[in-house]
Image 1: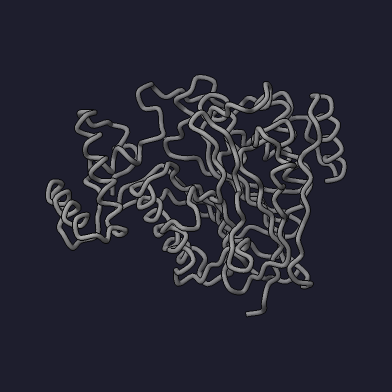
Image 2: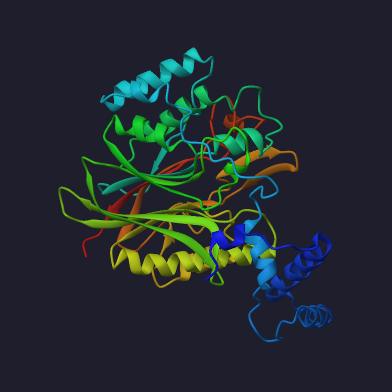
Length: 410
């Protein structure tokens, strides 16, 4: 297996040659969708050009794969390894309190920042069963990447100001009173650990091995994935981490799993969070699918027969291979939000320099003993507003997903 340290050592390559190789690899990755005889002949020629056997599963050549797993990090500049210290001024102010007191504090501070209230959302109850656990999934938007890289061209001035955004982020999480919280793009873990810890949560964090944040001057440390749980309801049995692999090469995406025991019943569950590779195209979809398969095989071992909740920003619409791989795996996972056979229209809606992006890429998957009892609905287009998100009403470019689950006896 090739590690991220080996990738960072760097391999000299010709940009023109790499572009050509990527174009060929993209065509080969589309091979499964190619049907016409003429297209199949062209595909066979491309396979021959790249030295790929005609009937084999396409695996990108090593030098292309090494480039792909590094893509997204700003490797032309040296790393700037800053500590997670941007919230040192407020962390000591989060002393033990009630959830209601903390919500009041959030509302007051949001008002003091001149922000309107958060978008109003409602729960849709599916069944009348008493829920066993409420799970929140959310890509919170890395502050460093959002401010310096993501280019939200329609967002109002000041939308990404951190003092206001962190309070809105905190209120969005705690107002739904989740038992378990799964987050991606976390680059201010110490703030969340202190604020959520003040009302009884404990958390784990696993950073990306080569976070793109570390190549930007005003970073607050690497971004990664976090899982929090309510200590009064659950005790932590163990936590596990995985740097996801693609064709036995270590990628820059991770997963974090926590085995939890419910204090009153002794029931145990496995909760995992992940964030798969971004970018469109057949080649990246194939890479995501391989990340997903690696994740699922790892979860099969880690969960050890326990009910599973798998949350994440998969960067994949329901039509992508990784969605099918996830829902057909032997773990028996289903999407909580796939009601009547349909996923929501969107879980992220933003406007970047390249255009408007509105699609479903975030999920809460669950295994068979868990059944969705209620779901937090998404705001409609009018409520979101023409600038989409992030906005003065909402702190991330992704919407949170919240699901109540009932648990069937084994």
